[in-house]
Amino acid sequence: MQKKTISKKILSANEEYALRNRRFLAGQKKLCLNLISSPGSGKTTILARTISELKGKIKIGVIEGDIQTDFDAQKIRATGAPAVQINTAGACHLSAAQISTALENLPVKDLDIIFIENVGNLVCPSAFELGETAKVVVLSVAEGDDKPAKYPAIFAKSKVLLVNKIDLLRAGGLVDFDIERVKADARKLNKGIKFFPISAKTGEGMKLWYDWLLKTIERQFSQK
Amino acid sequence: MHETMIAESLLAAISEEARKHNSKPVSAKISCGMLSAVNDEILCFAFDAAAKGTPCEGMRLEIEHKAKPDAPLLLEEIEFEAD
Image (tube, rainbow over the protein chains, first blue to last red):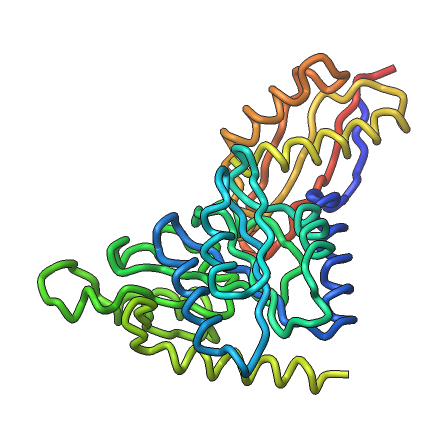
């Protein structure tokens, strides 16, 4: 037997595309946020509300990833924002090459933020860099407060945690969800993670999320 | 099942080394951190499936999980058949 030491990074094909996307977005000075969550946590509703309420202040474009259908792209286009739908036909995550193509089909120059809505999945999307500026993880209260502990990778890698559907907590008795536990568990994995409890349905808490977006864009533009 | 895509990239990397080395690979050592979210069993299964009909068919994978969560996924070592 002969042994050969290699030390080569794997995932290289995806990472090459991710690097290309990152350079392109940095050159254009665009903020690109990769939204990751389970199916049904409210990603599309969060985006639609964000687009509508920030209209006139900033321009947002969306890349939608789903296994099938263009339902989400239609919902985004109904707000007046440009959207590109990617159908992964079974794949459980978006990959960087798909984002490269999607970026060619968005009017990137006219936009301030490009959101990528990843395929609903708390596991696989966290392992594939797309060239985004940052990841944003969404957790809805109906999913349970043990998710950061159970699915640590995505909470460790995200810059922002949006806890959605907090209007259900106000109703009392509908769901058992300890929001402080989520915050503590997420911070254990990721000290600097921004934490915004929101309801994309009622609008509660959304302002702090908008403030963070506007501030982050400003920072992005002031970078050389 | 993101392991499927990792398995394909891994297979491509090992195949390239095997061509350079002009020898059949028998086993490979890889390493990763927690953030790579690699499940050993699924990765081995996906690799077996991808390697079928290639010179890498039947290879053994040894996966080391490093303590550093963000340790990159590395192909560390390949063992080849003796000439």
